[in-house]
Image (tube, rainbow, N blue to C red; front, side, top):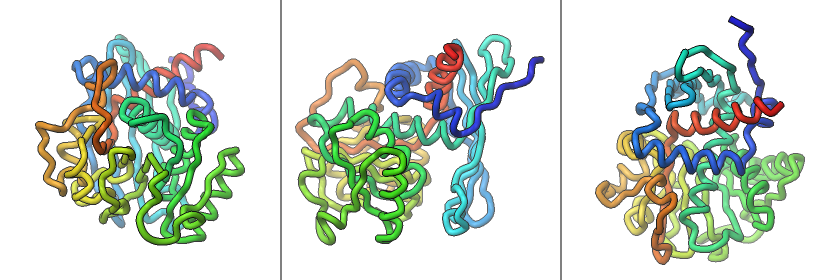
Length: 309
């Protein structure tokens, strides 16, 4: 067997163009709903100090993938990344491994691209102003995606402390994306009405978005992925039409929805919206918990990009 090619974080990012990711995820969302991508709910094993080891396989007619990552929230206090891992990509017929991608980069970029697909399909109008809640790795990936796909939009960030917000803004400036701290326009009270897209990217156990539901604002939750964690207030969820990335996984892992006691018969998958119509005159919440299907979609993009180099 030839030497297995391994791409580090920088090389992996270069293979995963955000626009191509959005297109690939759109196709994968439909395939996943149709059962053409097989992706069981991830297996989670506990690690020390509240960490978790996640195994996420998926297969389709062209490729099969396996992502193995660790998520350790307390690493932030150690000045270490909270996510480590790798994604192995195999031929779907022979099973032969083809290459390995950096797991956190795949996770970050495909999650941000999935949010951008949600914006494309669910937003009541062209987004003009985004608020990112959280200053971690996933928030940075989202800022990069917004900067790439919505260049005319403003981006604000809300973190736990002014210093974390400042560090985030400085980091994104170095990457060519302008971000301002929310405190510059609203120190206290409700989020300004002109912010039409809110993306919560934290591992908070209690809601970090508590404003009421608004038909003019799309709320997306991407950070919490356990039943005991909720980033979006239950009242907001209950007053909104709810969409999810993976229906089966959300019923097990989406604490925002579980704690709100949503009527699952009224919840729709994002795949059901692709190529269809959806009313946009009501508040909407899009909750993602992640799926190997989305990693597979990202690996398709990387595979095609690698073949061109």
